[in-house]
Length: 264
Ligand SMILES: Nc1ncnc2c1ncn2[C@@H]1O[C@H](COP(=O)(O)OP(=O)(O)OP(=O)(O)O)[C@@H](O)[C@H]1O
Ligand SMILES: [Mg+2]
Image 1 (spheres, rainbow, N blue to C red):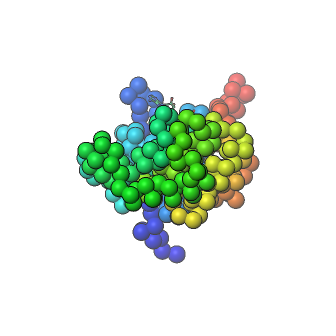
Image 2: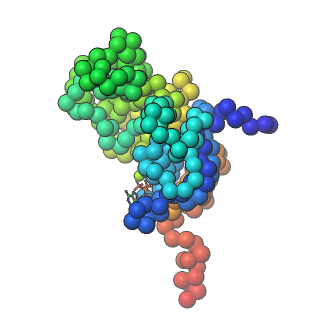
Image 3: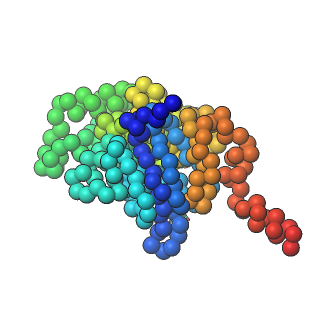
């Protein structure tokens, strides 16, 4: 079948990243992510998961290659263009990144900031349409009744769902989530992952999620990307991600080196 170019949402073209201190973040990442996918990135601590995710919205600058988002080069974009590309990308962090002393509503409305002038935002003048969008977003994560509660009065799981609502209010077509459930208990973890899955299915928002848990990756992903030392060591459907594959992703030492050591 011919590949439909219009379906490609994120494209990595031979992307590498070396941090200023010489640490290797990514090495020659070459892949694309299509509209509607639920991609889970797995790998050991230090494998490059956060670096990969954060390079998509240029929270981290790559040192080689190019990244295309929604048909535009975020690597080359400047000023207004960069700002507009970023507006289509929602971001969810392990620690929620909410303004804790503000209301839930305020936090969700902050997803709309990119659509208005600075002055308007300094004055906090959000149009009614934005308030409707924010309430709709809260409805979708089951928190509409919490709209006027202070964010720090919610549980961790609820706070994470507020951050999901913020990405929805932003009307992003891509959501990047860096270990969104790492600080949550098992039940809450499931609620947050279910929200992401539902949003992916109902709104066709493309998900790129970093997870530590292999179980969750298998359960929620449509595609798994395994990273090791900044390189892609597996990229395929969940059905192809066998125990051997995970073993390869999560083995600390290179098997070759281990064998050599035995031979010594
Ligand atoms: N700001 C930084 N400065 C220098 N090196 C960094 C920086 N951030 C990450 N690195 C290095 O880049 C590599 C990839 O790190 P990254 O944070 O992307 O890994 P990760 O897979 O997200 O790990 P974790 O599961 O612990 O979050 C590691 O070797 C790390 O030490
Ligand atoms: Mg990380």
